[in-house]
Amino acid sequence: MELERATSMVLDIWLSFRTLPVWVQVWVAFILVPVNLLPLAFLDQPQGHLIAWLAISGMALNVPIMLGARGMSGAMALPHILCWVPLVIIATLLLFSEDRLSPAFAGFLWVLLIVDITSLVFDFRDAARWLRSRRAP
Image (cartoon, rainbow, N blue to C red; front, side, top):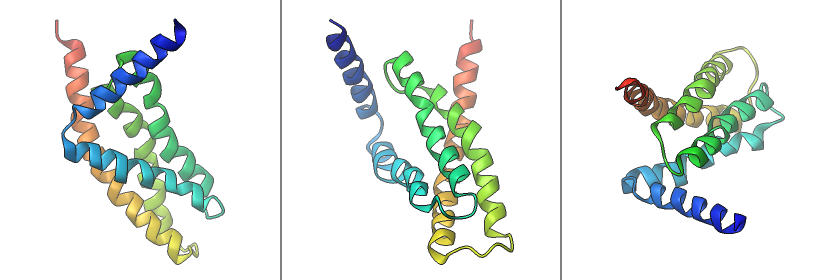
């Protein structure tokens, strides 16, 4: 029974994801998630552990939200804001610091900034919509 319920929940989440516009599915699956997992390749770089922790936490904290909602929810923007705003600040400070960054890490930080700032533009809008919907009578 538990396996059946867990399978049903995973299927509900998958079906919810598949109802998103195709461009959002592509963005999430092929850009957002891979780029935010890539800091694992740079753990030896300045602030590498912190950057990896913030990048991955912004995604991992969505798991309980998806499970609770049994699908996609505007609340999923909140962990992105919580984790990726500090991440963007740290990455920006690193790029403009006097620290010697490897060219690969510096290039990656630019990609991470572009991707996560783009995501945050949508996340602030989605979070505001979700919070307004929670206050509606």
